[in-house]
Length: 517
Ligand code: NAD
Image (cartoon, rainbow, N blue to C red; front, top):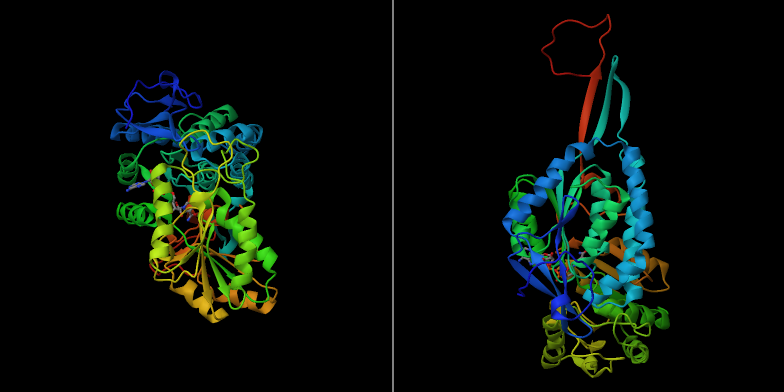
């Protein structure tokens, strides 16, 4: 924990203790930090230095944020669809104009290279664009004359105050899986972003305000379990969207559901990429390295396990090795860097520990990222280069745990069926991919595999905004995926109306159950 008086600055990047940035909540259209007795430190992962602090919410801050969102709800719910879409379009333009600035903010706190951070904003923008079509998405159904002179129709209405709790690895994109759709549907929103890289969310709140969103419709609450529990237990929060690790996802799901809330909780992942003997091995090696080491493996859709079907293992390993040798590791703001540092020292050390445990348990450390040189190193950053463990088996800790770092495990199997057994036995089911030139094998894979998002010769099959994002098994608790029509349904409830306008033929008491006639 760090001390010091709060200042309402969100993106001062100086290192001097007196001028370090301090990130505040955003409640009812303005910064708010009056009660921040507890604070967290924000690091620059490329140098290892403390770059600033973030105020942690106390229960009173949670109440203030939810109260602001609750007060804003009636006005926003009743705002016309054209007013809502005008604001969404303006927000889209502002996000586009500030994409570079946001990418720098994200890179400075998360560590990912700026081009990658710009990519996450681009994917978030797609959800904003999807939400710009809300008048079409909110159309209900209408049936005329379901009975004599009786019409039936359905209306999609917002829930009220909804909350989003998000992870460190996509500080802009993952919140944008949630709030554009929630707000477009007429809800008001409280975002609890990761405390590790909180600044992007506040800048986004400023852009919403500039776009004309009424105060209180979008609020940001920083902090830890205190803030999260406050939201989970608050009677005025009607729905909770969560993205993060599986143990926390399970906790969020159980706690929010117990409180009668609607909840979707997306969890961790272990994504397998199956390479069949007929695959183009150059394409497969490019894909494994790109999807394994992009964003230092800190992506829920990263490929963490390559399942090499005999006899491709040796040749594929050689091709992966050639490509890893050419990767450039360095600070996120250095244009030469292809991969940045990990998010914290503690996380880097934990990820690196799997290299030792893997070897102790019988794997071969084919590439040791602890020896990778770093471009323009500026201090004691949280570095770990791309690493490859070969001959991994499902009993090993490096296979069983979600490592969430630049460590690619290679499991060798004798057949397609053995590859399918490996995936089926894994508790996670977020993403997967198959590399093959056999359309029949690919079709069989897409049909049989128990995973929510499938790539065919595509290693990171993140669905477009107009489809929905979500895994199966321990990668999702709840029944709604994020964005797309599932997002619209998650953030609305349907009202079915049956209407009869009186005419001269009405009349008569009838105690029977209503039937059509
Ligand atoms: P995390 O679970 O540690 O934290 C996520 C959020 O929960 C943060 O806002 C954090 O403050 C809060 N939190 C943490 N511990 C908590 C607790 N005990 N009680 C209440 N709240 C708590 O996850 P992370 O380390 O920030 O992110 C990485 C994880 O997120 C990985 O497991 C990754 O697979 C997962 N992830 C999943 C998806 C997906 O779509 N399935 C997408 C991105 C990331």
